[in-house]
Length: 253
View: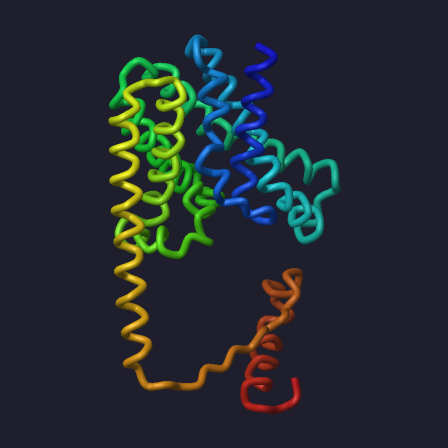
């Protein structure tokens, strides 16, 4: 069981590595494999708590900065800010926990494993984005930002579609490792990946053509540089826009 715990923690860290500041997006394609190995042969209850551990580690290491926001801008003492962060992570960890439970239940059914698991992950991300006022941060699809061709498919399926593809990759690689319908795994994943990348390259070509045909024009950007502690302070609600307007029109800031 100790080895399974280590693997679950490893999956949590690999999931985090795809997000800033590391941004090792390619590790997201294998991040769930240690968790899949950890729950192999485990009961549903054991798989659930291994998934919970994975999720807690992942969200604690991804959302660590929330402690500073609560402490610095919310005015809560350091200990209470840490407690709020831990409570948030304790809630968010239930989503990977249910995903691990599904993975344990579906491990003998190839199509539920290969297609059902990506759908389950996306469904859980969607619920997380809307339940209890919603928390849509740290969706797995966001890690693929550097892959410009791949993420163009998001204009059809959103970030959830990109998450689906990444989980499909994890499920397919795991199936190959355990020699579970290897040809079907490679074929389905290869076709889905090729379709997404092919669509992305076509879209990028269309965008480049539109850019070449469009007349040039000048765009100006103004960095407001307003401290977060002042942004919503009523005392600065009139002063801040006036300062920005002064910069735009060339006057004193």
